[in-house]
Image (cartoon, rainbow, N blue to C red; front, side, top):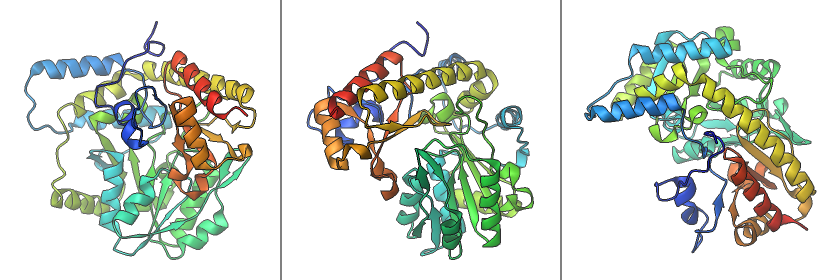
Length: 390
């Protein structure tokens, strides 16, 4: 039994996924609910990371820490090897997470009532952060056809004409699209034409299925790279969300200085004592673990797609090109989102995410996390089938 087959009990560990499911879904008794919603894995972190954290813990002193040059080198070497993307050391800024990084960029480079473009269905903090900071969100919905999303570039350009910033999900969450170079180049061209800055959230960039390859937006932007802020982290890749460490790649020196000033003004400086140790062990020693994990996820996806097709034929699922998240189209069932969620929670005793959480363009879909041991996945599929079988 290896790390990807053993079932680990995560209850009573202050896990949002497992211990907060009752609060999130407003359940009186969540004890029999199987959570397959929030995007963290039910797999332990890679052994080299655990070893590094144990070593750091055993030292026993947790004073102020900083991200050393060795940390920068680890990030740079990782992306050079995997993505043929050559990041200069001075481009890197470290942050506590992707969400606070995006929030800091919004606050630094836009003003109240500025317009920010997002392309739903998309990760909810994109529009929530903008709204919470008093910015106006312009929605340019993706086009879905047979389970595959594309960008409506005509509508996208129309929205850009009055916008200051575009927040982009590369690869896409929740749809799992890996954008092509042609699509990325058109995004850059249009944002350049209308002088719009870009935040490219690339936290899922390591989670490629099969022969798919991640293309960092900055890598193909050429002379327009100055308008791009790339947000990335080892946390999704190696299941380290609770460690809280992320990076912003900003090629423009003036913009980096403004972000550093913003961090100083808000008291956002040093990261936690475990972040450097975890990052180094992840990027320098855990690639073999990642390869095995991605193989496991790919097999889980194939199993889930095939099993649900048999058990609930009305569901339509296309295997994603990236992430460990299935985007399930239930529109053929003829049920409202409230009806589907009630059936899943009351009859199936399983928690999936409702598609409208990702914007109105996601209504009619469910997001399901398959980053778990096969026995847990089988249980989850049976619960979904019990709830939704006609």
